Length: 147
Image (cartoon, rainbow, N blue to C red; front, top):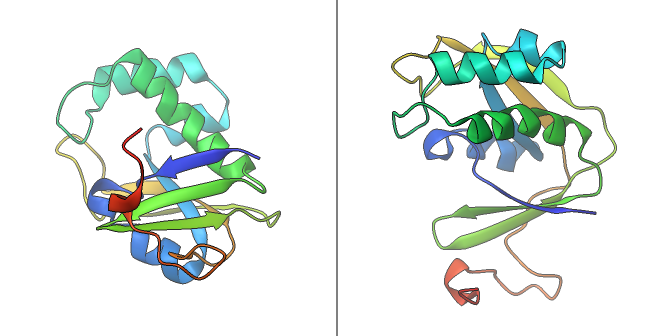
């Protein structure tokens, strides 16, 4: 079991779907998907560095592009992993299931200037999200230890 901290899209636009649909997700520019399908990590990274920007509008480093490549695989293969998400002051958590992930092409709700109209969404089923611990106490971000 691994623990991941997630941010579901620029300004968390995928979070409402994750919460209501009980899944985790990431999205990729549609032009990168063929590299991921072919498991062409080097081609994927080269394309991203040359053609894409981060949410802050800067070219990704090779390390950042590599993390983008890895994230789709991590999402798809996740099973029994704990995923954490911060929404406002609340801390939410879920655990991925053994159900099969699905990949769909759909509109990019927060397109970047050099992005495409569509993105591939990689979604993996999970248990219902909760903002409470097992004793029923609400989990708040500010109550976490700074370290």
